Length: 337
Image (cartoon, rainbow, N blue to C red; front, side):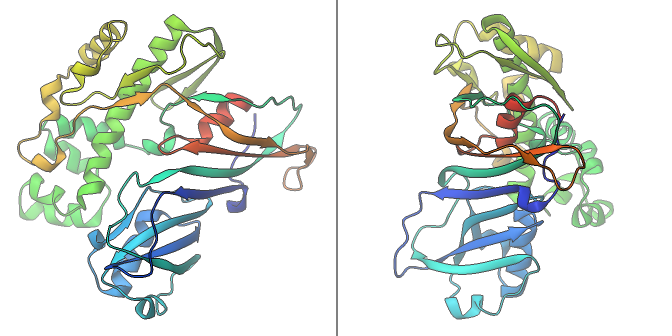
């Protein structure tokens, strides 16, 4: 057993950016450092204070609320002087340069993490060089995956009922559910479908590893069970498609029956991911690595935990590729929370 994020400073995330920064351009690039703030909420407040639309602010990925994080954002047609007047609690904004390309989701190499693991008893920790690339709880929240399934099944009114958003709920009595959904930024509505796709992918990977790997840990989470296996060269480099429109063409022979089983269980088809009512939500399937490398890992000294009497703490530092979850590394190293 262990505790994460007892303090925001226990979980530090710094983006490893691939953005080319120049001296001029129509986009201003800013480094945003935040504590106990959600990326989307910070973007909303930044847009409000600058009196611009939210979709003119770009970022490469949403960072944890309960953490100290650092990331780049792009702001369209806003100069350095206007940014100086922005004040957001627990947020610092630094102009780092300009460019002619907005920052979009995925525009980064990866993330570097510094994590303090607390409330430990007996400690025997070994470095790991790879980790199963599951999507973790942060992806799913309370109802994200369920809303995503409602959307692809065209059960729009059911999806709207589950969305905890004032603009959506206020709009619902006045018009249809599709109109209510359009009150949300497109990337937020896509997030729900992505969450459902992520659940499906986790299920396929868990079944694949049960059949192909030597299991070392099984850890339950809100939507299923994570299966962790020993380092096995035969599994290295394996990719499994995230189910979506057109993903069938990426399926290898050993994966096809696993995907079909989960789709039958969920009563979905590939064409369900075509959403004619809101074409922008039609999402294709892509390949995702089953394992990712854990780079530049260091494990600190075991120390007394000043927040938990009689317990120990330890600091772990490592870098992961974009789209991978640091909490999955901690799960594999330390087990269940």
